Length: 141
Image 1 (tube, rainbow, N blue to C red):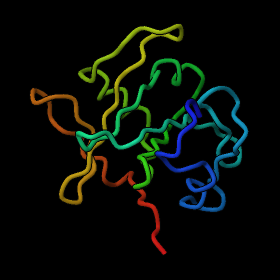
Image 2 (image 1 turned 30 degrees about the vertical axis):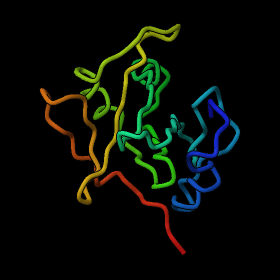
Image 3 (image 1 turned 180 degrees about the vertical axis):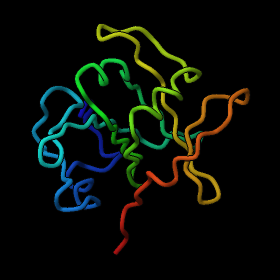
C-alpha cells in the first residue's frame, strides 16, 4: 500500500470494518488496486493525519476509471475509512489540484472532519462535499 508506516489502519483493520461479503483481498492486483467482494476491484489509498487536521491523498482517478474501479477506499489514519464512488471523486477533481505522473493526472484528495461531518475540500473558493454517509469509523472496544 505504498509507504510503510504505522500512521494509518492496516488492510486487516480495514476489513474488520467491512461486511463479510465485502472484504478487500490483501494481495493487490497492482499497486493500490485490490480484489474486493465477490468479483470487483477497489482502489485503496491511505493517509496519516496531517498537522493541519486533514488527510491528504494522491488519486489517479482517470486511470482507476479506465481499469474499471467504481469505488475508492480512503484510509483516514486511525479514524476510519471512506469508501466513495469514483464519480463523486471525479466531480471533486475539477477543483482539487493535480500533478502529472506516468498514469496521467494524480489528483489531490483532501478529507477533513469537523463537528461530526466528514467532507472533501479544496480551498475557500469551492463548496465542501459532504461524504459523511461514506465514512465508517474505527470501532473502539
